[in-house]
Image (tube, rainbow, N blue to C red):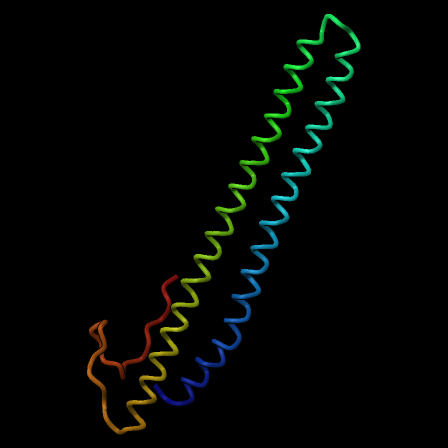
Length: 144
């Protein structure tokens, strides 16, 4: 690998790492938006349940039915909000894990580039690292 190739790799990393950080910030914002939407929906459902309960309470014979229906709607709203929050958390975790993997891969490429440059600067080759390939070998392309 030539110095020009390493410069190109470092430039790509300078571009990709900030975009990875922005992507994680967008993911967290998206998660927060989903949770806020779920909470707003739950509040709307609760409000609707209370309104409906008040309408049903106007007739004494339906008091028991109205309370049961209101409770059911409230519980349904809470369950929807809980599921949406879980889904948002799962989504955020998946995206952040992917970004973590990309950052680890980029870091390994930097280490390989530094090792390669270090070996050339001393005029010799280094022994193989723990992966079994020589440290002077070019980094492998990312798996996608």
